[in-house]
Image 1: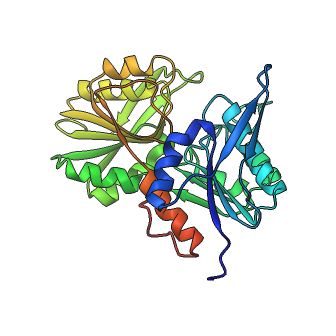
Image 2 (image 1 turned 45 degrees about the vertical axis):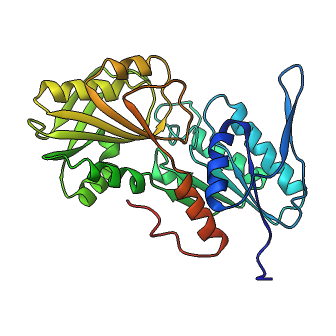
Length: 312
């Protein structure tokens, strides 16, 4: 006996496709759990095996509907009440992260509310990937392992062997991420400036920097309606860019996103499987994050440093 508690993995319904891959890479199996549904839509998750004294990892991305978040909260609560030794919530995609501040009067800070809910439910540690805002880690009073998809995207972009490569930030808030990519890829970066009067709609976009005869890769934490992304890509092509690609961690892809991407000059959109695609597209390439999460979970379980497990 090495003194460590037994390890068990469970998954919410929305992220089972990814949880199975993570656990397989880890060399384990998903634990047995079920969800009872009432006729009015209410549901009750339960563990179908003992978790007493175990270190429990619960894997669930919290993309819409909000049932996915609430199912995770109830599973955490169930594990706590079943005397789990330690509970780790693995959220490949952390929903409500865009609500990280009061950007106008009389609104909720949704990201802070979610962190409070997770903590109150009884979670001891959180693992997530590419938060919309790094400072959300400070909303927690428990350890947060913030993993970066750049550890997957940077090698892929390198292997493309693009000449005159330029990394682009889609907005001012993405400059830190773009700078990290440009540093590791040893190339220049440009910044897009966008004027947005309401959510999910961009009125105007401009680029700061030279894109003529360059191969552009736009990097971001997520792609939602793809309005900004496709508008930026078209603008760069109009300004003489040789090609435009994008690497966005979380494929939210709502509304007319797929149609916009298909009709845009974007040659390739790299995403991860933190959120399942709603439909296939020849332009969208999915890179799995299963190996990264399996590696980080293994290091956390064995009390090893994870600082060399990602790039940024």
